[in-house]
Structure formats: C-alpha cells, structure tokens
Image 1: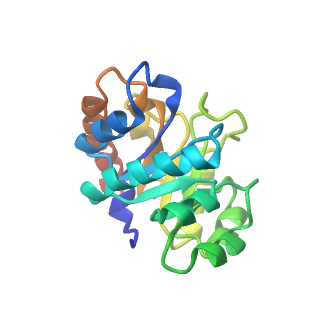
Image 2 (image 1 turned 90 degrees about the vertical axis):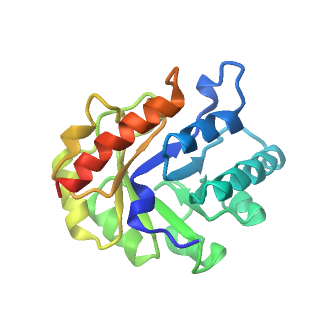
Image 3 (image 1 turned 60 degrees about the vertical axis):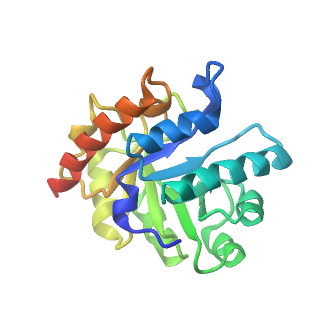
Length: 214
C-alpha cells in the first residue's frame, strides 16, 4: 500500500495500558470508526508468535477500513504478517538496511529528533518521519523533547511527510499550526479516552485545522 500524506492526518499508535478488560481489536475499531487514518501496532513486551497473531487480526481490520497498517520496530513481524510497513526508531535498525529487508513498496516510518537525522532517513528510503516528543510524553520513557522550531526546520528540510508525536491532545494540538506537519501521531489521546470514537473525531477535526493553516 502506498502512503499518501492525507493518510497521516490522524495516526493512532496502540497501547495495552488502557484496555480495562476490552480487546485491542475493539479499541482499534472504535478509533477507525472515529476517523483514524493510520494505525501502528506497538507491542514492546510480546513474543513474536503472539505479536504475529495479533498483527494479522489488526491488519484485516485496517484493510476493512482501507487504512494503512504498520508494525512498530519489529521488522520480522512486519514481513511475516505482510503489514503495509514498519516504523523504526533511531536506536533500532538502520533505515537503509530495513528498506532493503522490506522491499521498495512497503511503508517505512522513521523517528527523528534532528534535521540531520531527518535528512538521512529520507535519503535511506523513509516514507515518512515521526518527529517528537513535541510536548513531552509518559508513553515513551526514552523520548527526547523536540522544540516546535526544530519540528518546523525538519518539515522544511525534507520532502517526505512529517508527523508530530509526543503528548499531543485536543488541548494543545492547535499549537502545531504553522510547523508544516501532515498530521499527528497519538497514543493516550485516543486509547485512554472513555469514548474512543468521540475522542478520535474531535482530535481529527482539530488536526485538520492545523494542516489547513500551512
């Protein structure tokens, strides 16, 4: 699946923290019903066999809604599940190596915190960049803060789409106006909400205002 910048408007990253007896499948479906445009399956503490089984289930759900589906970090699960792509961080495998492993047609997302990292990732075959943490976050222990000025510099330096991530919610998303991003990636703003579908709809509406301003 090719990835258009409009697919990145509202990028939902899964997290089991807020399941509260619900299933991840149901939570992702609610996000999709609310208008999530991109899904990343993130499992830090799951064995590959269980991760693969889950990936196949979520992949079929995303296909039903015609939304791109990528795996966080785990290239092996990405390949075995035939997901649309994979997202890697700076501390994971080198982007060019991952591009060779997954082939030229898969989506490759790369995390970046500096202009240099962003430019190199684009050169190595990244499809899009995830830049942050723009507002600080409790979802990732190792996330470095990225200023809005650096975010704008990164957007100006590359020709591939840039998604902002890190502590983004309906209370602060409008602060991203004028940065040049194509969308936002969120975890708790969607999956920690009491009403996931409603929270997704509200955040998508606000994010569209941010993008329209550029």
